[in-house]
Image (cartoon, rainbow, N blue to C red; front, top):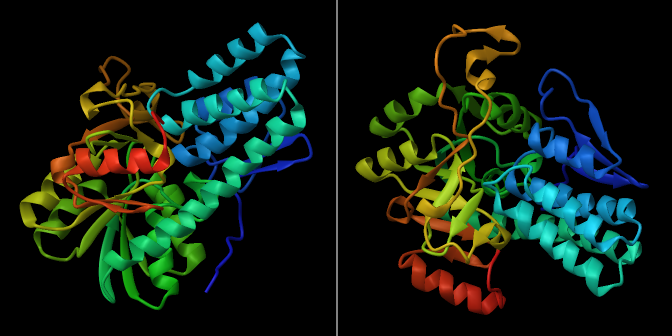
Length: 346
């Protein structure tokens, strides 16, 4: 049964990119309007829009704005595209989308219609891939399953439907008896603010937990599998994802709990051999020292605030993509996938 979302993380309306401002959820549902490259850069950098596939979708339209602003000036166009890529360094979909639409711009003689169509195609393709990921991933979920997830991987993190949360939603709508534990996901609380919001709207039975409660649930045999997303997957199967993913993978491996990453093939960076070469974004100290504008730590304390960590492929049961579930040996199977896709890099 095809279920449609009743909200969109991003949508072009006329010549404006309309983003559901995820900084304000769940307290307020308000749109953020992008009319320029600068607007898209800010939206990605400040996490108005977040999640690797959604960032890619927004970035595609950012290139459309870049072509419009450059007015045929190739150097200016390329500077604006490079500027967009630098908004966030870890999520590979950002550079992938910018470079894809940049190539379309060059090949079409900077036709705004062709550029806009390619950006539109990125969105529609992502939604189709996510639907397929959901169908394929549902096969790993038992008829009665308690699932733990981390951060947000639903329709808010993508151009529609979602990756890991899309798998959970597909299983639920297929009639499987699922219960979801959602980590709050500090320091920006994407699990509490966003995943919990999506689970409630989808009417999926769920509970929100502190991040540190996950280990106890796994140890006590209360979790059947963990499924979460990815911001970059390297050629050997290492996965960069929201901070806290690595710790979960270690606990799951120790207690024998299946641990899956779900992502479209656009999130695979075939050009990077392993996870230790992934640039890890470190964000502002205020994300740790402040909560909703309230100070929770002294100004004098140092802060280490990486947004992501890297989970080694040895800890991963499978990587769920729209092309199937990739398993060990990851380097060999991902190379087969790369050849099938005909891609040199992400």
